[in-house]
Image (cartoon, rainbow, N blue to C red; front, side, top):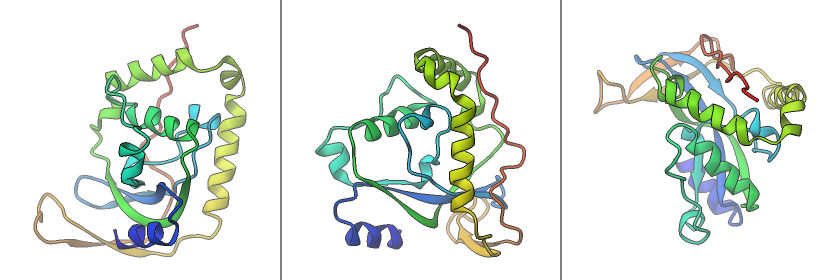
Length: 193
């Protein structure tokens, strides 16, 4: 992560950096890429604007500030952790470069029953005014993403370790880059009161 290191060196006051990520399938083939946005206290209740694999932190966040994952959450731990960063005013920035890879196996934890249960728990504690303004926050996030991706990304190559090649990187080509995560329409929990 040379670029992340260089970014931290050039920005000594920034403690958390969010980067863009490539989403691949189990074979390493490109599905899409996800740009990161700076999380906002209100809108992140509705749309979590980063993939955890694209989050880089300084040691000071854990050792100096004592901000760690809340172990009561298995699937939404990243949400509550980033929310705590935002609430405490930790200096953050976005490095708009592809640095990380997320593998969508189709059987990821966040698609299972526990994730749905935790999402319902989050819904219960969500402020009522956030629930009422849900369409606004969805639109706001879409506009912010559109502004981040206004210039179409050109086809690109990436190199990763795979299950069939764990000791040597395999090269792949993203011929038609997109931010649309095909087949991943996340089901929102049905509100219960």
